[in-house]
Amino acid sequence: MNPKHFACRVIGFAMGIVLLALPSTAFAQNDPSHARVFPPELVVYGMTYGDWAAAFWQWETSLPLSSNPAVTGTNCLIGQQNGPVFFAPVSLGGPVTATCTIPANKAIFLTVLTSECSTIEGPPFNGSNPQELRQCNGAVTDTLDPNTLTLTVDGHPVVRNLRQFRVQTPSFKFIMPATDNLFNQPGVTSATSELDGYFVMLKPLAQGQHVIHFGGTFTSGPAAGFSADTTLNLIVE
Image (cartoon, rainbow, N blue to C red; front, side, top):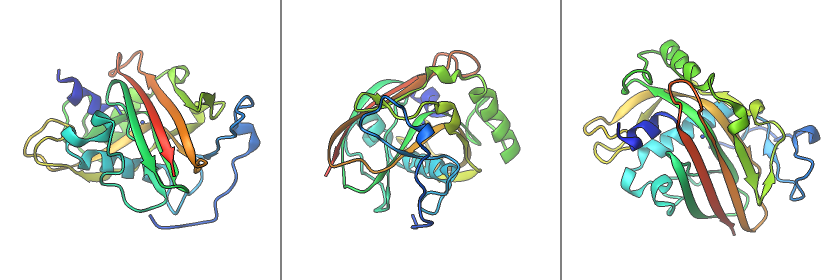
């Protein structure tokens, strides 16, 4: 099986309401940088976590594989809107290191690890309607041991319990290039998809250099053996 094709099956802007502070119980006690996240139940910049996860995948799939930051580790802002959120590139399988420069005051959306099912993939990662897509993803993500998940900022854990950050998207459509696309399916330009995984929205980081590390491993189930491991060298200016 083409590893890039398999990796794509399993992945990780309107201003809205006033944003709430994260309760102190959700912070790692040994995190001196006090990196903060938006709780997954909040509406953030006018969108839910599920909406942001869908928007991330729409961005990721819109880019040619050959120039995708998840592959090249560069040009991280390609295709991103001038909104309040930066989509961090995510490993498509195995370790990847990306170096990105972003403007200050941008929140950072991280896909720690996720399942993805769509209408264009073969079993067991496909479905023809929202119910089937939801069942497809559940069969994958339910087998994940959250203890394999990791997320650190500048070497320090961000939250105590990543289990709380499991998010399901609504059904959504994505558009991809007719060639050189993430699914390795020439001639296919659109599909319907859903994601079910672990996502974290970091509040904007201070100006300067930061290292964000995130990922996880499926140890059982349909995606057994898939591992995502992303190191993001981030320059905030």
